[in-house]
Image 1 (spheres, rainbow, N blue to C red):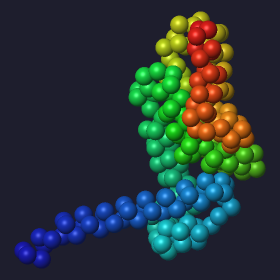
Image 2: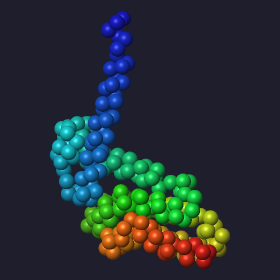
Image 3: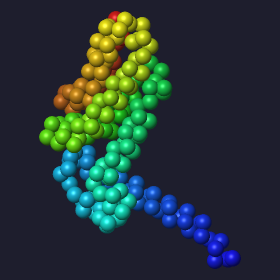
Image 4: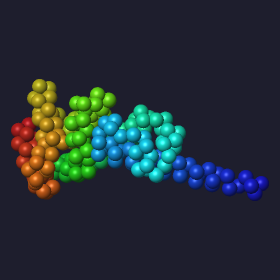
Length: 198
């Protein structure tokens, strides 16, 4: 009887450790992926960075494809949480949320988009990111867009998607070396005429 009592606790600890190991592996994969988007690194590198064996990676994720799918799912969910249109109250808030996301993920996203041309396997990841961005713009600026006729709405949404794109952030923040605050101001100055004209 006494021998059986601790088992649920031990199983709970074991499950918790397995979950922590899985997160460490995903963290390692994501870090390597953002450094070198594509298939330019091995499971050995992922395992070494995570502090586990390659067999542990394979046992947990079934290999490279399973690992990439799990990492993509986790990161997509994180970005969707970070870019939550329901938390936006005004245009300045939308810009703040957008720039916050790009400050964290913008450089990696830009490398992913550049690598997509040479690595066809990355196309679904990039396309999913584009769809999330478009949906965010449609929701973040929905009050403005809903007042427009269908043709104008489609054109205006395309304009908003372009202004809020990671390339625009890169041009302002990296190429022009604007501060984060000035980048937000510049984006607001680009967005406000579009929103006021609606």
